[in-house]
Each structure stands twice: as C-alpha cells, then as structure tokens.
Image 1 (spheres, one colour):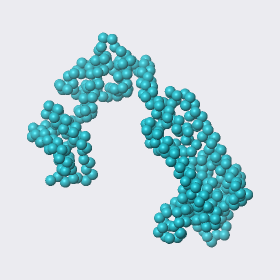
Image 2 (image 1 turned 180 degrees about the vertical axis):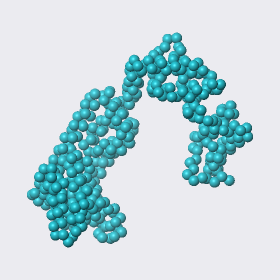
Image 3 (image 1 turned 30 degrees about the horizontal axis):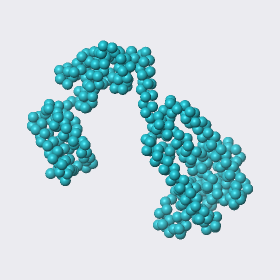
Image 4 (image 1 turned 45 degrees about the vertical axis):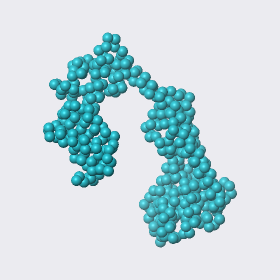
Length: 438
C-alpha cells in the first residue's frame, strides 16, 4: 500500500481526466508515454490512487491509467523525452500550430500585411521571442514526423524573420501594436472609467492601498486602468490629473489645520470648542498616517528618539532629564519654524516623547493582568479605534483617565461609532457594485 508522502498535493479531477484523455486519444505509444510522464510520474499516480480510494468513479479512471502506465513501462516507453526543444510537449504543439498559420498567411497570393503583423504581435510579441521559440526546433527537428506540416515554414524561417523585421524597422509594428492595445483598452473602457471615477470620488477619505484592497485589484491593474482612461477618456483623465494637484493642496490644508490646532491648544490651554487642552486632545491631533512633511517630522520626533533622549528618560536620578530631552528634540528640529519647537515642548511636557509611547498592546493584556475594569478597557479600545490612535499602554490609560474624569461621554462615543459604521457599510456596498463590474 502506498503511503501518502509529506507535502503531497493530489491531482485535481480535471487533471486526472486530462491524463485519461491523453491515454485514450494519443495512439503513438512513444508520444503517449512522454506526454503522460510529463504530467504525472507513475509513483505519484499510485499515491493518487490511495488518495482517491473512496471515490469510486475516479478510482476506475486511475486504475485504467495505471494499466496504461504499466504496459508502456513493459515496452520501455515510459521515458521522459530530453528537453530537445526547450519547451513542454503541449507548448511544442502550440508552436507548430502558430508557425503553420503564419506561414500559410505569408504564402497567400495577396499578403495582408496588417493581419500578418497582427498575428506576429499576438503570437510572439517581438523579434527576439520569435527567433528564440524556433531556434532549437530548426536545429533538432530533422527526421521528426511531428514537424512535417511545417517543413517548408522552417526552411523559409529567415524570410519570415526578415518580413517581421521589416515591419519593426519601418514603424509598422508600432502602429499595429498601438491599434491592438487600443482595441483591448476599448474592451475595458467601462470598467476602467468606473474604477477611476470611484477613486476620484473617494480619494479624500481613503489612501490608494485601501482603495485597491476594497476593489480587489492590484496596483499594476489600477495603473492599466488609468492608462485606459488617459487614452480613451480625456475628460475623466483631466479630473484625475487635477486630483493629484488637489491631493497635495488638501494634505497641506489638513496639516495646517492640525498644526494650528495643536499650537493653539498648547499656547492657550483650550481646544477650538472651549474644552481644556490636555494630553488626550493632543494625542487625537497627532498624525498616525500619511500627512506629508508634518507626518515625517512628528514621526521622527515621537517614534525615533535619539540615544541621548533615551538615556535622559531612563536616568530618573537626573533632575535635568526633561530639560536635556527637550534640548535634544529642539536641536533635531532646529530648522523648523518656532511652532514646531512649541509642539515638541508639549510632547515632552505630556510625556509623549518616549520610545514606548506608541508600542501597541492587545486587549488581552488587560484581561490577563486585571489592571483595569474590563468595561473601561473596552470603551478605551473603541475610542482609540474610532480616532485611529495606536492602542498602547499609555494611550489606553489616558482614555480611561478621561472616562473617569468625565471628559469622555460613552453615549456620544457610541453615536459617533454607529454613524461611522453606517457610513462604512454604505461605502462597502458601493465597492460590491464595483466588483460586480470587474
């Protein structure tokens, strides 16, 4: 009995039926042996018999295949053909068929150059690939009956090559290639326009990676869709170009508003709506995702404190530790405007300038340690998730303190979360429609 080997991947039923088709239809024993062996070894076939032992229909097919493999082995015909032509048997048949079609069109009484060039591009793409596919065939096909139908084509291969080279050298190749690409683009016009329109519509709310994930497409596919729009939809393409400019303007505007809110809060002690400006309000305003130059500077100030700053923080006996830390941060952003220095001072004052400040902690940490009321921890994580703030030990405790101090109203938070969830649900429904178009 054959044991199932480790990491064994069984043949699919479709693959098994393909083997059966080869076994029944290929009359040449030698070719049949090579084709069967190129798809599945006799050893693996036996393992598949064990794997499918409970499937009666498949077992019958596999047993017939085992008999054919055995008969071929007895005739010493179950051998892997040397890779004389640099491709599989199926690829070889395909190359024969393509060259036959090309040569028949080339030898027709009135050559249709467009059709011939179109066939060349569709089949081979470029001259190097055309030459590469048939180099070994020309060298090793002598006496092989499989190439009888393209003997003339192989003898006149140089003429075919020179014809295609003429198309390339005279620019005709590029003209036909552009027409083929545009024809393909027209097939994708509706999808491309739909995707790009949706991107323009949602760009102010989400980043490109999130958009691609929501649509279920790759970055290269999106680039292709933008190329389709650029080629075939100039009106929409103009909006796309305007978007890249407006994106920079929007980031600059958001950064200005964010910096102003932090600066005004630090200097006045109040938020825009009159609340006390504290560490929690500051944390809500800090950038945790792409915000251009502001994000880079703040990220460097918060997440990558220099060694001197770390040493100063860790040296609790040093009464000047905070001052040393502040001086180091001010030195880092010495080229920034005074507003940045003020913000840096606030980061140090509130204790946020710490390498561990944004080190995220899972909710299970609080469940296991029982350091806080589970209900309070749950509210804290919902609050942080809503404002997209990293859930670290420090930020969780900050929210819990705000909850206990009456700064956070749970009912208001629930209402905000509910409204956000409903908006996201509608957004997801719109992406379902997008995916239906794809």
